[in-house]
Image (cartoon, rainbow, N blue to C red; front, side, top):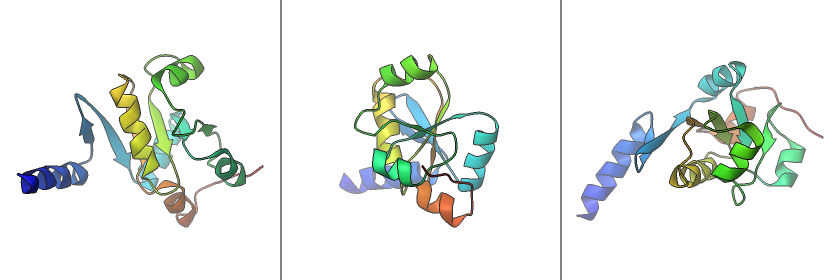
Length: 129
């Protein structure tokens, strides 16, 4: 039985979208993320304040993974807005996406699969304080 769960998990990871309950989020490559940003998607940084201050994606909004919620997003940006979440390496952004899905967030959720590490390695624009 455990093998079946592992196989289902591996299949979900290998697909373009990861499903939690009836909702899903979509991991994006760095290049796909840049395209979404250029289209005006709201960028949410779920790292800590210190990390965000030292290096961030231009135009990103800091909402720490521990604090992120459907209510906070809706109060800042309106209901059902499509968002792009990122963290350092692509782990905590998935946690944040699942948290939002579990709370019933209805906007499309994308996340940068490689996080800031991949963003910087790809030579994409950043800013600091």
